[in-house]
Image (cartoon, rainbow, N blue to C red; front, side, top):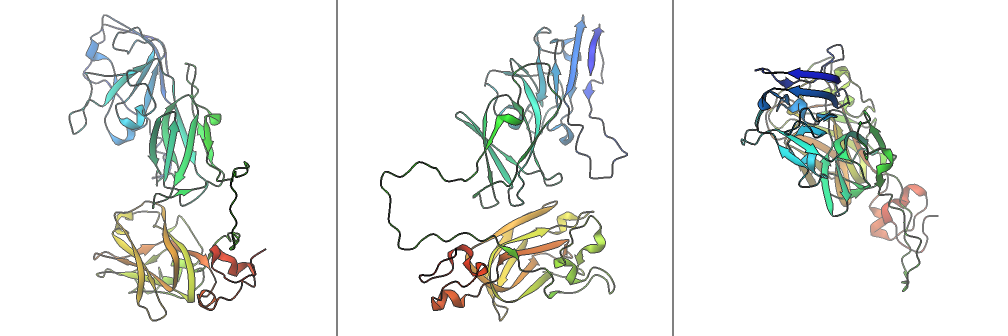
Length: 396
């Protein structure tokens, strides 16, 4: 915070404002200070291009400065904010609110990376969805919508927003809307200006049915069956991989032992082979809803990239697969699709790197496809999954 500071005849060749890093925090756990920089300053007889600005580096992606007195503004008198000059910072600001600063650094395309915005009040916000498969958050205010993507390192959505009311919807990797569990909104330092965002600014999609009756109700001869939450089909099941990195460490069974740890000793790790793979045997054909994969936590996350999630039948023949391009830092969920029954799930790289996994969860229902073929009715809640059962007896 700069409070009641006067810069007089200020001329300097070093004007970048850098973020503070607390090096006492464990590597990889730094999440930023969570506060904007605040200034109440006056610049007297100082060069216009001597005013400070933010560096264009990645660490300044969400940083901004509230200039309470307007001393750093282009005119030197108007209060406002110095921000990173990118769409994610200006998505919900009026089109005429921000002026690109003519001094400071530039992005690779030549665009200046700082802007000054007036007549707005912005605040730093974190949102956690409460559901693992949410990878995209779309906020809508009036006719404007903008998509924010999950920060894999910190497992949250980060943004800088002005005040107002926002409709918030989460989506998975297949761009299908998912209903959040218990979203958590965190707001940081309260600006000096008014009209800023707070926890009440967000309305999340609940997926609850409307209570308004239909003017033309329809008659269904196939009543909707209750949805049964999928279970972890893979934990503790027999696992194998192409080869082991060590004779004493990182066995295949660590990939589905239910332990998601920050210590690499709990991961599975193959030797370096072309198209390295890890596989779990579900013990029979099971209906699969999704597969969630956790990467190793300590390093080398890019090795788990460009791979297939494969669904195999009882003979080991491939039924279907999902391709993942690139890598992710923490975890990612892959939706299997409709009516996928498989006995084996295999993760297989397309390159020559070793394959390491912290955990794999195969989510679905312990129900045989024989029910679908025979037309048998459901006899317990486990078999009531996703409308699989037929006949006249339905799940209660």
